[in-house]
Length: 331
Image (cartoon, rainbow, N blue to C red; front, side):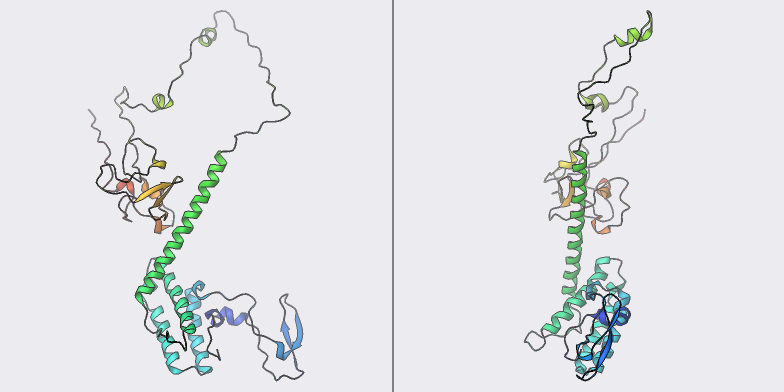
C-alpha cells in the first residue's frame, strides 16, 4: 500500500484481516517476537525477519462474494488515506467502486451479469496499476459498458463449454458402461451345461400338443411391435416427438440428425447432434430435455433455448416452426 502497488481486496475483508499475522515493526536490533507457524505452534524469531502473510492464499477479486466486496472497498479507501495516496486516485477508486455497487446488473436475475461486475472490477483495476506512468494510463471512474458486456459474454461462453464437457463425459461414461458384458462367466463352470430335470407327459395332456405347435417368430421387431397402420380397433399410431434439429415428426434417427434445413425446407437449422449431444453450430451446449413436451426442471437456464428458433420461452416441441402433430377424429 505504501508503494501504491496492486493488492488483492481479500486482504481488506473481515476474514482476511482476522487471518493476517501481526507485523513486527521494531528496529533491526536483537529483538525477538512470537510468530505463529503453519502447524499452529509459536516460536521466537527475529523481528526483522517477521513477515506479514495469511494462513491461506488470498482469493482473487473475481472470486469474492458481494458481501466481501462491500467489506473490502471502504476499508481499502481508509488505507489509501493512511498511506497518503494522491487524492485524485482516492476519488477515482471511490467513484469506481460506487458505480460497480450501484450498476443495474447488480440486481439482475442473470447470474453471468452479476458475476461480470466483479470480474470487470478485478481485471480493470489490475490493468490500471500496470499502466501507471505509461502513455496507456486511464481512469477507472466511468464503467466501459462495451467491455463489461464482453466480460459477461466470455463468462457465459466458458460456462457453456464447461457444461458441454460435463455432458460429453457423462455420455462417454454411459457408452463405456453399455459396452460391458451383462454378466461375467464363471471359469469353474464355463463350458458345462446344467442337466435339465426329466419331464413326464401323460397321454392326452394338453401341454403335449402345445409344445408341438409351431411358434410364431416375427421377422422384424419393428413390424411386430410398432404397427405402421392403425390398429384393428381404430386406435391411431402413436405421435412421434419433434426432432430437435430438423423439427420433423417423421420417423428417423434423431440422435444422428444433422439436416441443414428444417422439415419444410423453409429455415436453416441452428443446432446439430454431435456424439448424441445437442449443440449449436459453435459447439455450445443446448439442453435436450428442454425440447421435449415436459420441458426441463434442472437449474441450468443459460442452455434452455429452443433448438429450432433460439427462443428461451419454449422448446422444440412447442416451436411454431415444428411440424404439427396429425389431428385425430373419433367417429
